Length: 455
Image 1: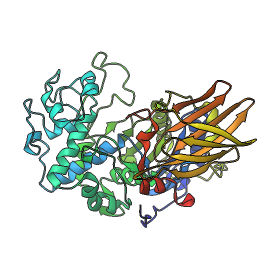
Image 2: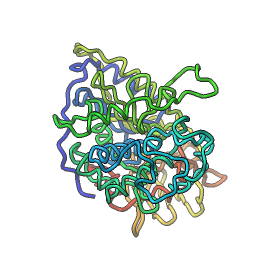
Image 3: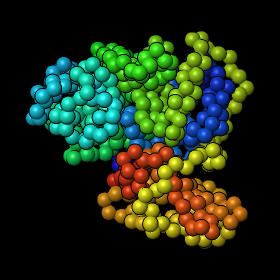
Image 4: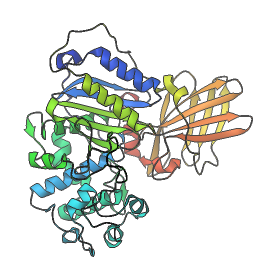
């Protein structure tokens, strides 16, 4: 993957834009001590970066899977197509795809996730446009919200058919290049970019789109995204309250859903599994990009929104709060809770090389040395796909624990070896399949996942 040569985002002291350094320090402490496993964070206001940081072994310039944040980029592709007269958002899906559409589902129904299917139905739907259109919903289209990744996949199919290009290629001259986003990879599914997930972004990439949305589609003085589409996409078209208890507390998932974005109690957001967030606060010019790995992403979101609330609209005096010179996910490892077992884990091995050195073997990928003194990074695998990984270990009496981080994703494997043998569990389980091979990426993407400093 070519090295990015884009212009760096401008920077400013937090206090110059109404944010005390102490508030940033407190947010970092909350993320770390709360077991929320932060990976990267960028805070900006009026297009200027007030803080940027990444927790080792992740790197700020390394792209990683952002899960359903991808959906917002798919919606933006539809917005550009609508602006170019190639897609009518109110038109039925079968205008663009040669598929039966007996229930009259429109592009807008897909954008707002109002296809009429219940949440239970959406979990069972295959990622097939024909199935989505053919299987009748429990409700009439346009009358019921249910979070629906197959709908986003259908939007990808529409964008591909209408433009004659993949989502990635279509968005490159219209969005990625104007925002200064370098070459990026989108996981394909049945010949098209997934749309609902699969996009790999750096924290800067996520910040750039968030900054642009916070400024009405402008970036670096240029109108990149049509203002009218942003106005439409950020409206709460869908009622996301619990239908069984609509008067219950709204939280941050009951504030409505726009065109592949969620409403928040402050602004709106791009939202991906395990806490991939782009927080957009247009009326205050605030943009926050975040990547992490928590099964309690609502806690992460609440912490980030409290930081938004801490902003003043006037400059602040500099304080004496100091930020830690380096951030490392290893310091919070004891707070990380393993989840599901790694499936297809036969053949993994962990052998001793010394008192605090080991050799980790991963089937069909290779081996990597592990030690207790710091993270080791490497690209493993041969052929068409690879794994970008970082490892670090420790010995506690008769037990050895090793953390294997897959750098192009939010995920890590926690390995434990004792007298009972070797056990492997995920910390945050991959959504597609709980196997290591689901995180393999093209070799060029794996190399980029190491970050420039490690390449």
